[in-house]
Length: 184
Length: 290
Image 1: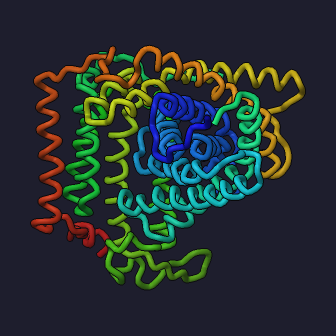
Image 2: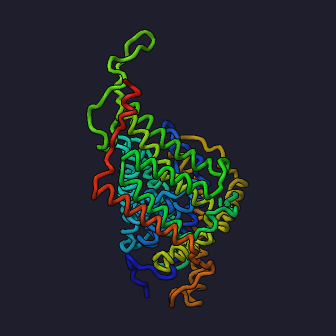
Image 3: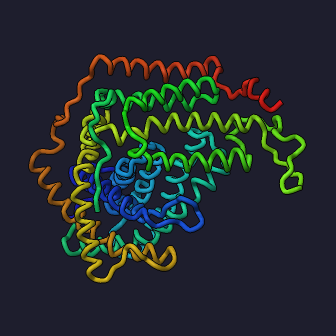
């Protein structure tokens, strides 16, 4: 009998998925940081942001949140960038919000599921990077223009592009695993 | 791919402070520093942060990657936004103010009118104090805190056990996932995949990452089922966890904790009860432009 998907479930499997997701996000973030966004100074393109988004869609919002939150902390710790809680929380939301569609997905290959995931990837990037950028007003005293043009737009645009391209590819690849192994 | 932790034991004073006390101090500092724009408070906090940073005994060579990030952020926020474009300061600096060049200045024979005010320059100075102070606290963490202590520390600070254990587990997965990544990259390179020289536009570049990201991710997911089963068989989550990494407060940790409480509460009371945290420009700074 197929087990019903619990939106906020966090059992042993989810603990492992979240840990694997966070470690994967950290490793891939470091490995793929070499791509630079043309014309946006030092802002790097991070294809690895697709990992928290995909883990949210595939395993639920808590797994998505931890993947983004802990993964970003670990990536920053490994790169020696320090600890920036507000950007870590923003990365957590990148995974949590797409994770809200987790119980509604029946097939990861279905175009309906992929479209839904794409919409929530955009929403997650908007809210996640929006929160992280706005927090710079509180921490650094930046004004709204700086927050929008120096923080929010480069981060939002690069995350959305990466998410929109890579999340569907990951979903289709995961669908093959689900079908082959009979996972839910 | 070589993934290594930045931490190493230096026998510095910071190595002897309990990680919990260090996290509490860093967040108390964040609360205090973000509650004020008064330069006297910010300068005091900056000096405290400097002393704290020095306790770590780190070198510039070790920490420069973190500082490069902070200096880039400072340049964007302060030089471009506050000084050049005058975009303002989040409502802290009142509109108007005293112009640095009230009659403009000569540049290549032309008179240039640049609306930079003394208040904006002073605000930029306050921003530098605040951002550098906060950065000194948080940049230090990867270099001076043992990654093995995170799970036990977060659990002890009140984080649910499962969440703390997830952090611990993620740290332990990193070396094996980095190895899987290297193996996959080598395998794809053997098939003609070029990671170092991906040509084309942004979309092409991202799509070309897929042959690397997808196999690593799917392999990790496949192996996680076995790990979860092994944990279930050993009764994971059935009782209160114990941690391999033992934490114990010492006398000096209580001093750090007391100082942290004083810093956060004192900062909040001074700013929000006595309204001493407002932005002000000292008279001596105006005199410099007289």
